[in-house]
Length: 373
Ligand code: GLU
Image (cartoon, rainbow, N blue to C red):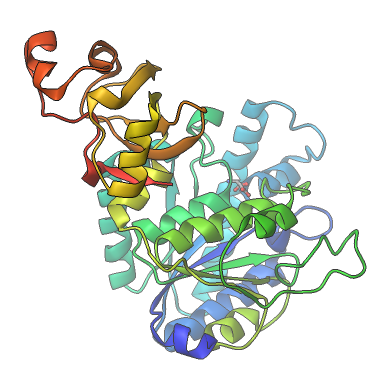
């Protein structure tokens, strides 16, 4: 089964976590980086296009500055990332150069990918780099981000990059063999699960929370990343990056680690961007009739079904759509700003012009700009 799936893979995003890249002292592990780059070179020879999403900047900076326990504030972490990012890139450059390959640094923020124009610019740049045979090494631009505009973690970033780069596979390198039935550090009966056909609530529950001291992710964020990539029709393979030969083995279709199959109905890429890349800036609560029309009948959201508008947003912003129970069930781009939508609550579409003195159309959120979650 894996071999069949991999036959369709040409472009792969490899996400490498801090725990893979650092040694027991928390410094960059040059031997591991060297081995990973050797394997990337093998993939290139086999005709794969490779994009790397690499963590390790903060860890490298922390060790370089000798600040093992002192990174308490965000500016301290950002300073460490700024120091470490150059070390990280140097390590990749040197190790790739051994294999006659070149690296390029790409630093992104969530706001970058939230702008459709910048998103498309990033896509075009990645395409050009791959066209030159260069290995893009992507990280979050840690210097300029604070929590609200962060990707959260590089697992999330890697899933978004599969969409930006129109990649066919996400390979997550972490420090355990794959996805286990329970936490193998706690439960001796935990078994490795080679195939996850769908990311159900049980799978998410088994993934638990983050347990890492270096890096921000954990099993939960990896499963969330696999789910996001899967919504885009992209499969994820999670393996231990500490194992030699694992990258090549995974791409050959050997039964290593855990394969997460994509969901059957992949969202198209624009809808994926709406659902997962954009940060919602408001909330629209709708009545049961409208909820039903959106969920079951594939309709657009009309002002008549809106009961409340919260938050401040401009026309075109991404908003959460919630039922009266408060549960979000859809997300979309609003055709009206929060101020305008607030005035249109409960009205008929034919009344919009009379209320606002102008109108942008009959709907608050058009079906084409909406994703059911
Ligand atoms: N961007 C961070 C770094 O390079 C890592 C974030 C993460 O591991 O999720 O250190």
